[in-house]
Image 1 (cartoon, rainbow, N blue to C red):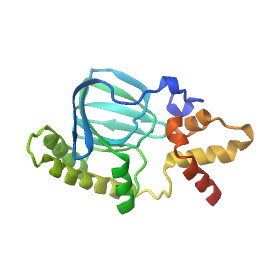
Image 2: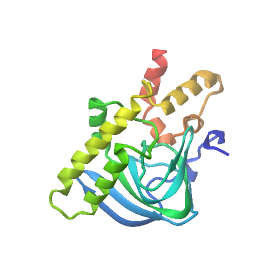
Image 3: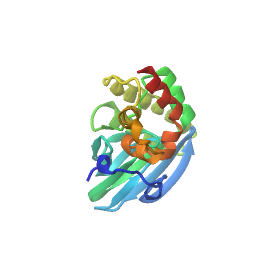
Image 4: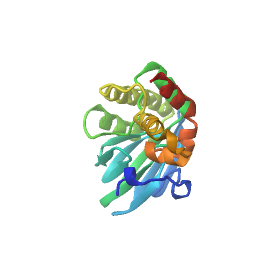
Length: 222
């Protein structure tokens, strides 16, 4: 059963934060770095993250299942996860070793003002992003006093590359917001609850509630 088949997203079955065995947490240049290891064959049920983040797969592999998209992430790949996007994970026979970099909301707003908005889950196996992911991991492990400055530059490069990839898909609003809009239009007579609408969109109810005004603007514009 996919996430799209679940009729209602219940807050009690979701969790925010990071899972697995956390081996290190640090903050540099305004970004939070969480290094985690996951046991072979382990699974993480539906959950979400409060902040947008990138996940650098140092070793191992895993499969991420979002409401309308699935990502297969192998060693050296990089994934982008939007804030509030509900997903679940299944890890391969070798488990996985990952570095998760949380991107604060004010930094994401800065990126959106100067680049293509990216609000969809994305995975990258080849190209510049895996190389940049490896660099960000090395700098995170460094005790060099210049590491924060280098990290800031690499993160901007990552944002630029993700923006380039996102621009290939023409969307004026995030897809999850479009799904919520479509549900409002097609089921408005039924009196949708916030939880029902969040289930249709594939995001957490709290994240959807924080986006009510954009959703109304989108609906009014049609």
